[in-house]
Image 1 (tube, rainbow, N blue to C red):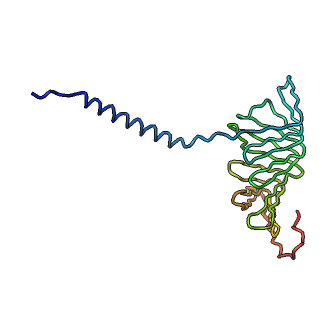
Image 2: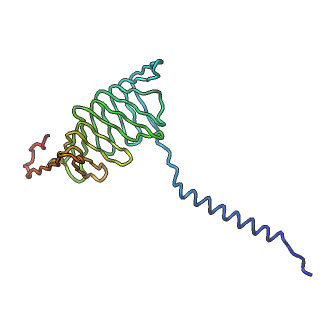
Image 3: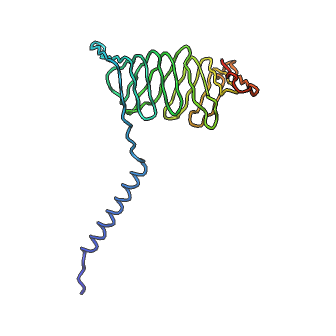
Length: 214
């Protein structure tokens, strides 16, 4: 009578189970996607003040940068040096530079999510935006009472008497959305309102002529 050899069968079952676990782990890793670490955040300021009663830190002549995004202002206020999930208020000559574009205003509230600059609410009289256009000598310019900049989406939403121009044409409306990466404009009237989108196309002007102004 032949003697059974359970050890090889047991080894095969263990190997099969290990293979299944390896496949499962690989599937989970693929579903999770690559783990992208937030880029380092750099903060440079002329001075800082700490209010212990309100746990508020105020920076003077401050510059905060991360990757392609750079925020500068005369003053920045925050409740601690926490970039995990926080809101920073910038005041005075606010300048935000990103992806070849620049936003300027008197005040901006910048939100950090997961140690990364996520969005900015820019207000001023007015808030302004500009970006050189690819393959053209023209510059896209915009201004509005408020501008919402979404870093992840790469878009700026202009609201409250919004105006955008590429040097040869201009668009006006209560809400204009500009895609920084695609360099295109989406204009929309306010839902339920009587606001209209107005587009003005200027004839080709001789060299040296001035771009349209709002």
